[in-house]
Length: 372
Image (tube, rainbow, N blue to C red):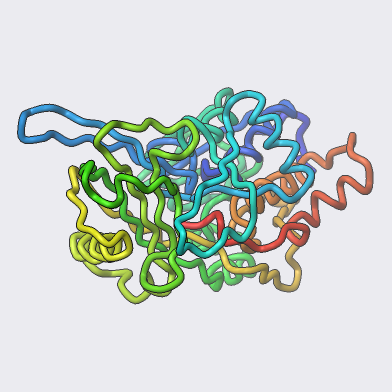
């Protein structure tokens, strides 16, 4: 439990885990500040804003969801959160029409934030003090509290507690000076990578694909794990004469080509997409993104780890999120709730509810829907 009734807390990471934990702590009356190296919230709930100019001098824009495909809701606590988010317009159900030769979905229905993937996280952090484009590279424990190091300097505020909600490989060096056992465990978590191609292609009304209505495919063979018509997802804008494609490579293919140049990867994935569609693509604009830490592995908790989080009350140090196993977006949510419950000691919760929260990491089944 936090030592002070009103504590100052730094949350490192603004993906769903960081956003959920930060909101819970703020609503309990604590002073929370969130730090993230990106330009905005979301983590792998990511949408890329694209802009390009055509030969006639016109500027075109598009937004493509290049992170998590979507997520399922199995646990009652997450189902309740999804219901509230849907009522507020931040999340929508998605039942994609699959390509005829696609592998089936592993679970249904799927949900996606609207109007873009970071929207739900932005909503959760609306009343939280946030700091963007800040890469935290060290944490110092001083007499006045925790200090956050960025580059050559230290953030001026001192904090009573720090929460880490970042991929394990990024958490490990921050943990090393303060919790060597946690750092060692985090450094060994084998996150799966993913190369992602996203782009806008011109649609030929005479081409075979112009009559296809499907919005997603999971090819059975080849380098492509997911093929998605992004403009057919809930709340996304469709533009006449354009097809918005997002393609996620399989983890094995990505590992093999992890350090290849982006142009080479774009050419390879574009060719694979054209082969899958059975026709060439006329790209108006296309780019690739490399997710080094796309999907956590199945639950792999070691000795001394709680079910879905770590909380060291004497030090005021907590960890939640990907480090505790693969339940995708749902797992991140439950991990963050469990950590917040431990930090607050949740006196208004029943014993059963508290135990359920703290064991949330074992409640949710593994799914691959949430990847890239």
